[in-house]
Length: 370
Ligand SMILES: Nc1ncnc2c1ncn2[C@@H]1O[C@H](COP(=O)(O)OP(=O)(O)O)[C@@H](O)[C@H]1O
Ligand SMILES: [Mg+2]
Image (cartoon, rainbow, N blue to C red):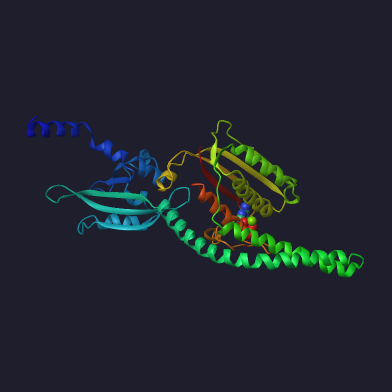
C-alpha cells in the first residue's frame, strides 16, 4: 500500500469521528463561550461537575452561570480581548445545591488562524479524588510512624500490666470480707482492664496483621454485628433499619477483621445517638466509578452505608476522625476508626464519612467483590 493511500485512509477514518463526539466524551468538563460571552458548548462532564444541565447552560452568559465562582469569571475575562491570555488555576466551584467541588481550571482564548478572537475554552478537572488520595497518603504516613512507636510501647506495657492484673485479682479475693478494701481492689482491676483494652487496640493498629481472605456474605457479618450491638445497653433504644440488596455478590475479606470494623462503626453510632435514634444500614453495588481511578485495586466493589441520626461530626473534626488518638469522648481511646481505616485499607477497600453537625453521620465502606 502506498504511503499516500495510507494517509488518505487514515484521514478518512479521522473524519468519521466528529469533534463534537470527542469533546462530549472527554472526562474533563469542556465549556466553550462565544463572542458575546454566551455558552455555546457544554459537555457531559461539565454537566456533572457543575450539576447544571446543558439545556440550561447553553445560551446563557458565562458570568451568570459561574456567578457564584467569581474566580472562574475572572479567568475567563482574562482570556477575552484585549488581553486574550490563557491561565490555569485551582479553586472551589460553587454548585446549585450548595456543595462545592474542588476543580482545576484551564482557560484559553479560542482564536481562528488569524488570531481573531472567537470565544473562550474552559476546561474543568475534578480534584476531589486527588485531594482524597493526598489525604490518604498523609494518613498512611502518620499511621505507620505512630504504629511503630505504639507497638514498641505496647509490648513493654503488656507484661508488667499482666503482673498488676494478676496481683490485683488475688488482692480482691484476699480482702473480700472487707467491703471498703474490696472496692479499692476492684477499682484497680477495672482500670487495669481498661488499659489492657487500650494496649490491645494499639497492638492491633501496629502489628502487620495476617489477613485471611475468604469469600464472605456481607449481610451475615452485618447481621451478626447488629445483633451483638443491639444486645448492648447503648443499642437497646435504637431502631435499626436494614436496606440490604439481596442480589449482592460475595465479598473478599477476613471475617474477624471485618466484624471488628463494623462493630467499631456501629458502636460509635450508638454512642453518638446516646441510645436513642435510628441506624440505617444500606448495602448496594458500588456505582461510584471514581474508586477505580484511585489507582488501587481494580475491580467491582460493594458499598455498605451506616447512617445514624445523632449529632453528627463537626466540620473541623472531620479530617481527624480516622487519626489514632483523636477522640471527642471523655473515655474514648480514639483508636476505633484508625483501626477500621487500617483494616479496610488492607482489604483494598475504602472507608469514608459524610456528616454535617446536627444531621447525623454516614460511614461508607467499599469492599471488593470476591
Ligand atoms: N457516628 C458518629 N457520630 C458522631 N461522631 C462520631 C461518630 N463516629 C465517630 N465519631 C467521632 O470520631 C471520633 C473517633 O472515633 P473512634 O476512633 O472510634 O474513637 P472513640 O470512639 O474512642 O472516640 C469520636 O470520638 C467521635 O468524635
Ligand atoms: Mg469508637
